[in-house]
Amino acid sequence: MPKIKAKATWVENVRSIVDNQRTHSIVCDLSTPAGGTDCGPTALELSMMALADCGATIFADVCKKSNIQPSKVEVTVEADKAPDSPVVTGITMKVNVVSNARKELVEAAWRRTEANCPVLIIFKDPTPVKVEFESKTE
Image (tube, rainbow, N blue to C red):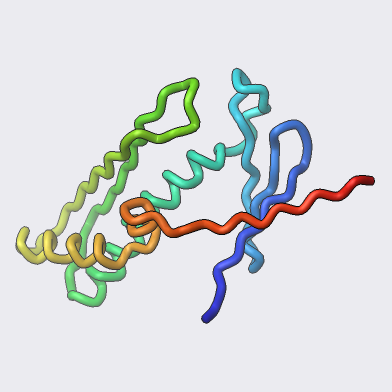
């Protein structure tokens, strides 16, 4: 089974570079009030960005395969989280589509999107995570 890989490398303070082990990387950082320099999204923001993009990308693919040609697709994700807590208590995904296709066809395409969007599935039915921790002394 092929593996999807990602690697985060700490740079300084609370900034890291996250790499997909192919050719893409992004800088993650905390906001200035949280002690960072705000030079990139936080990991939590990045996960919400991944969720929004997964919905848009999978929907576009489903539409292409279904001969639906939307003129506009926007997926917005909002996460509820108390400032002093690491826990997200709820997520709202808002999908805005404009198309000349029948409404029932577009809605069916979105249902197929929900059934096939891997990031949405992870959020709805969390995948077990095994943590392997190693520490070395210099």
